[in-house]
Length: 227
Image 1: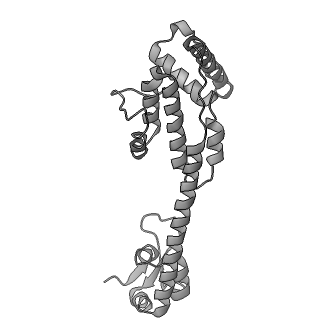
Image 2: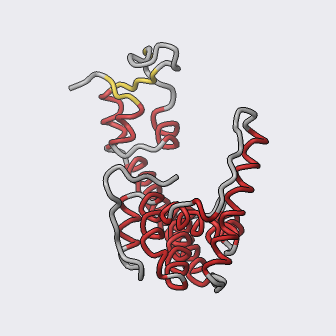
Image 3: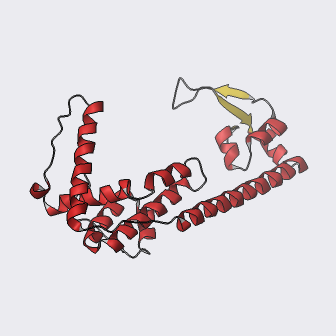
């Protein structure tokens, strides 16, 4: 049996920082960190003293209270996460219906504007305006989806509203998925591009969530990337 427990080992045995302070007090020894020499010394507590404390009623009471607080915190977090997701599920997503020619012209102009703005932050960047008739179909579809996603929906405003909320990551995934679904529903020819972008932006776990969407699950061809 080891002669001392580190704080990490105490945590594994069910000790919280407050319990350590209340029942054990100052450490019995300080030792240098074997992994990081510049780190703060490791606090070590004698094994016998720890075992005696763990048999006490005080330890049992403090551990029960800590577990109750932990369960309550988890329940509260789950509730707030659920509230965030319900809010996102109620957000109206409106995709404007315009002719394909008008949409592609607007998307190319949007792309060219962003390309020109990039030179403001990157002096070495030389803008290269694109012409609609010279853009291949996959690239054009990517630009159209980006234009619809960023300019013609409440995407950015809703994302800002999620900042700092419990469930921010899940809410962001759900909002993105709903927007892609809405774009694909209004413009069926963009369905594959919506699937591709959704897959490239989501982790494997959230990709499983996307399986429930009308646009379905999708895997890109080897070597394909989102620009």
